[in-house]
View 1 (spheres, rainbow, N blue to C red):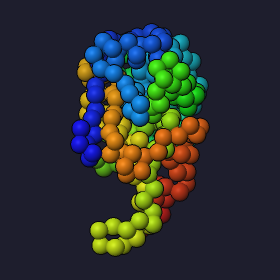
View 2: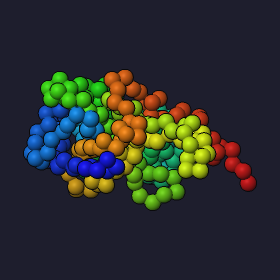
View 3: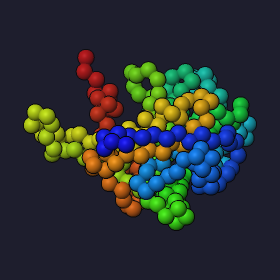
Length: 265
């Protein structure tokens, strides 16, 4: 591999519908794919795959909707049980249209709090993983303990971007490396100082991995990213315990949300 390349290795895995040991399944799947994971690799895992490993699968019929959920479901043409799960899982709600409630979950703006109804039996849904930051840290430390390697972990999801067609990837949580590279203070090609630029490495890797993971029946919930170039441009591995503040800004400081609330005609 040349020093400016990025290698993405898809790891195929049999479909899962019930709780399983995440570390052992990832390790065995890597071996079954005749691949290996090495020091300084970044392991990108579908957040849905992580949720299923926890048994975090909800049956809609088991959910009792509140009056608020019933009202919203009637207004926006949604199943009341799904609306209740969205209300339970959302950090905040911004608005809604038919079939979608725009919410914030883990500082990510997403429809329906990121709750997934695809690739799961009908009548069930998959929310984001429980205790997601600890889950990522635990997975990384198991690779260190049992495989004697230091790697980075990303739990990724697909997302919609305003005004754009289709989905891209987003890092829901990260462990083992700094998720962005700060370029502020550096100069561009014309000597202009960069004032706000930070490279969202974790999100960019999630988007790249999304090309292999797909959205349908690809059966690729795991991707290994390998690149010395990332280290050369400033990626730093770290044992620092990360949280959502390391991945995102407060939604009150978001230029899009602030701009939409101060529309200029």
